[in-house]
Length: 218
Image (cartoon, rainbow, N blue to C red; front, side):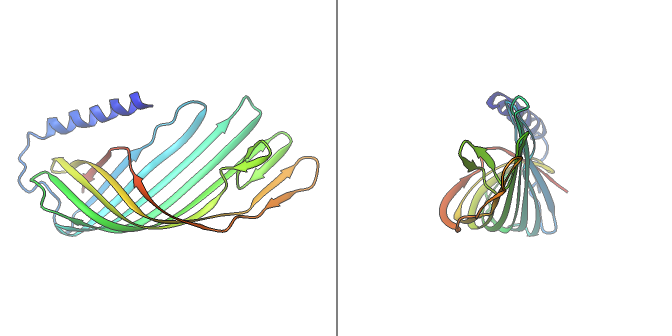
């Protein structure tokens, strides 16, 4: 996976530097500009998935102020020699605002804030049982479904290789609340069991996005 990531990053930088010969005047977005960006995740092994690790849109109220909304959809499916089938879906929506600084003609550093809403679903199916809300882990359940809410600060930078193309990086830090939901275990022979969700937890932690963001100005 690392090899694929490095190859993709090298391709992005090659395209960017080829475009960088263009005039840098007015290359950053101004008031009324709309940007869209994407980051795709890579999966290995026996996991098959659709990963939109980050889709984000921004609307610039002014050259130094932008509204943003991030969207994550991660759908995974795992199988093990036809013994079981596991699926999981993560959905995240995070609106926020950014404050951009002067930087350089092409570099646009920024800070911002966002709130996030997350929902995670999981299920497992085998010949003699079904689980709704999690995965089996021997005598316990893992990967339990949950609802999450977060409030945090972000910082990052965008580098505009051309007037309509940029690469970016970002990291954040904030509070995250997470509450697990119920898990239903339905064996083929025997009575059904419901494991009640645990009380919510609140954590203060960093959030580092390890991938490159490839964006376009519309």
